[in-house]
Image 1 (cartoon, one colour):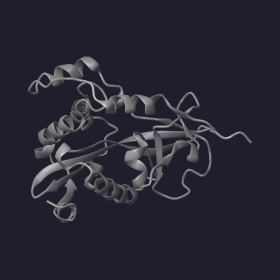
Image 2: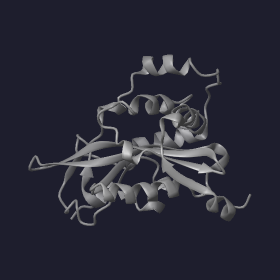
Image 3: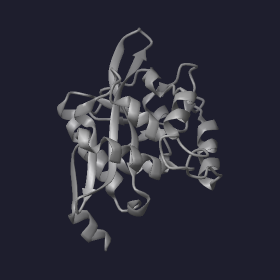
Image 4: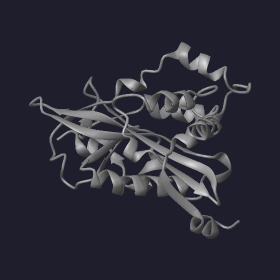
Length: 223
């Protein structure tokens, strides 16, 4: 199957309840041993749908010839400026593509479709923690470019920003707060994992890359 033929056959639509189990399995397949031995993304997907910060209008799946091969989900998050003003924004993730279909443009298609839907809903920005190599091609930029930092005032290299409405962040300094949903209950996640067929946890070089990005910070240029 060529890359071009694959793109022609991709259908993106809203997630339906009948997709829930397949989406959870997809995330387990896509993230197993990628960022850590095993993964928690399938548990995150499982609990996200009932959380108050979940945005169901942006839960999308991608199908190729009727097979579910990708998904993207969003939660609401917050930016607060130095005046104490808050802006409700979006955080996407998990964004998963089945290992057999990765690097073929499906993740980018899911992002672009979700961006258009997010704009229509009135959202002005998306902020994520992720590998820059996977997201800058879809328009994300370094957090420092938009003066978006975390609570301690630092600018993580993995913190990426996309303005859905150009100029909406206005050059002010903003502090990013993600949904408490992402504070995963490790014991609950482990119990959920036991409901799946056993799979070997192990090391992969991608875990080291993730650690490097997680520990790296950007610094404003001295004037």
